[in-house]
Image 1 (cartoon, helix red, strand yellow):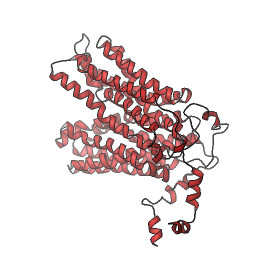
Image 2 (cartoon, rainbow, N blue to C red):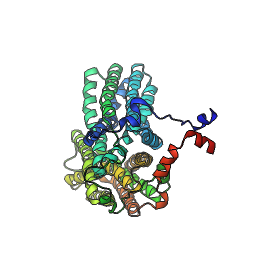
Image 3 (tube, rainbow, N blue to C red):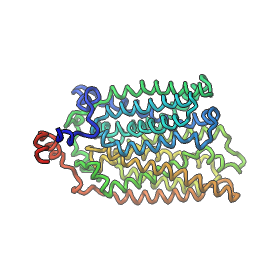
Length: 472
């Protein structure tokens, strides 16, 4: 008995409907059913980018400050990174159906707890629900389809992950007008906000359950018809070996990619977070200042560029290679920032085109990174590796807004206005993109010493429990 207790896993493997063995696809299963399963989760959790819709009503109904009303979103993003990093191995071990079910349960429960918190005027319940519980759903849901899509689409991994991660970028385009309409219908008092949260929780539970039901993993040894690994193994930086998540974080390639992602996201989120006031400040002293409505339209255009870049650029990476794609993201992104800095407020169309390019690279960087990880580390535990890498996102989410806002505030205090508020920030972003570009250039194939011996590990797992206890 003592031996059995010693070998019992801390998190037991799920059985029944949620078990990995129950999700193995039959021979007739179409792999094109997997992207809709992934989209059902990512379109739902992408609602996080629409949290700003709830800020004014919450501030008015509960007497909150702007900083207080941002707490649920900030905690949610922190928990996204932490749960993705620490839950990645569980997602790989227990399978995508279990992961999507956990994501659905946490994300929907977060809205239900938030509804209770608003109805009882206990704001800490909103922070706990949407931020902590819902944030866990964000992280597990974000990484849950990645390794499954890559296993189903080894011939087009960039396109496959781009489709899913596009949903996260586009989720706000659905959630923002939908939430606004419900608040108009139910009211912006505590009762109306609570009802809106309740509807969100129930509808997202139903919507995400489609992914839970549809998702499958391919049988061992499955390959797309007419495709062989040898066709891509000859390409630079593409391996047929596998690296475990524990070994991956010991490689310089992982940390180079961490720097690449952090720099690319910092540069993009710096514009995204302050887009509306930035374009108004830039052209405030010109003959044609930007109106509030036009600034809102600019934000919508940036969201569209963010979403479109995720599928377009990640699909392009299947053709030109991941390293070349990041050369474009980081090199062209630095040039776009330089054009904005040098042009100032002389050309509004030029400013908009450059900003759209930067945001498309921001979204494309998110969608391409899982395929880059697959190229370098194989498919074995790519979801767990991806989860650990997303800590770069959490870091960038703090750095980008902090750089832009702190410098703009300091320039305003010094009496400056217009493009001068952001010139220093723009050059800092250029510097960060150059650092990311250099880190990308340093990436080489992973040394064989880090490769996993999957056959030996499988043989170890199949040894009788009694033998292992005797060895112990």
